[in-house]
Image (cartoon, rainbow, N blue to C red; front, side, top):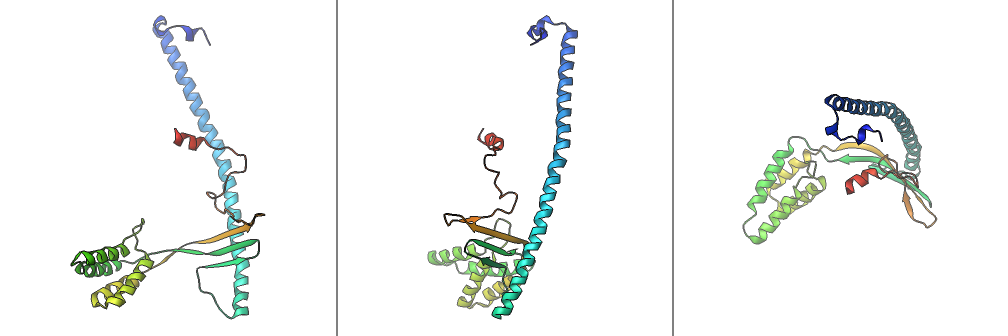
Length: 228
């Protein structure tokens, strides 16, 4: 500790105070410059490695789908059946893999007209406490998800109900909704697993967020901040 730091501010001259403040600002500026320089040298190296991993994953993904494309073609020939489904699973005693694509529900602009017709019909059913319960359950089938979309599975339930009620407007409204259905393919995926010595199925993480850190690696300052 320097002698200057032991001197009370009241004992320093105005010039000495200004000098100390200037030194502190200079030290802070140097520290911030060093931090930015460290960021500039660290980020490119980390991103370069991630680009390498991403490129590698992309190539392996294409290679894997190519493997099973041949298997599916062989399966169709051997069994005489062409499977038209979103995913296919192949497994042995110790290993398993599923390839396919995911689909999100999507609707065109005419869906609102169908929903309005169905809502009008449902509201007309509320005449007493018992029918009000039915109305509530029907409205739940038209409830949108977190993304603001209808659930296709629930609309299919409405379709079954419309056949039972046999009301022209109700049926037309449900059919309008179904005709507005425009599913959106979101991604091609690969899921894989293996059986460990205890015959437990262990899923193989194939995304950066799903992969755990290596055993013994400690990286807990973010969780420590949350606890604080």
